[in-house]
Image 1 (tube, each protein chain N blue to C red):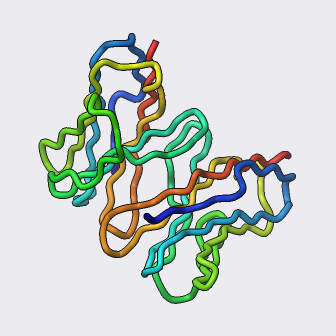
Image 2: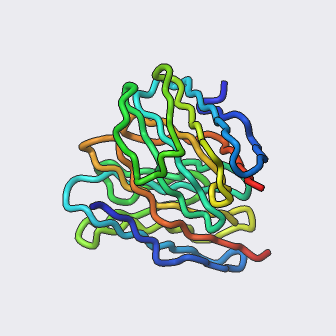
Image 3: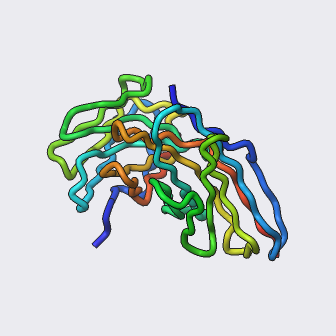
Length: 113
Length: 110
């Protein structure tokens, strides 16, 4: 069965620090990849997505992610975090054979002002 | 013009009661989902409906039953509520390339 792993469960950073959150998936076929963000008390919102083409994807609010097929990874990055980036971050995978989305367990990011 | 809406936003009830959560999407998507998010923020898929057919049921207790009167609605009915059912329940819809989530329903069972 497909699975998505997020190895960082809790990350605490100071403002202006750089961020990288790991995401690995297990599926041998073609996948679509997503990062969602959930701000405190809110629902999940899409940060960015990758379907094909340039493996470096740029999303909203200065986030980007790089798809490395050989490593089955789709890590999320931001060069300089802000206090307002404090949230839960979820990596998700969707196989192009259907409408099934597989979510990681999430990473809680706390940014200290 | 909310894309995915859920009602109620908060639901507080006693153990043993039966309750329903409603979900509606105006995106014209074919597939809708219910997720349960526990206190640790783990997001667990419960059901999905594609063109009114159940296509995922991740070992959810049969006290939970999804009902889809039409493609735009997927309601969640819960019988005999238990303490462990307390969580935030999210509805979502998709058209393969992205999922859109509703605002969530925080269920508290006393």
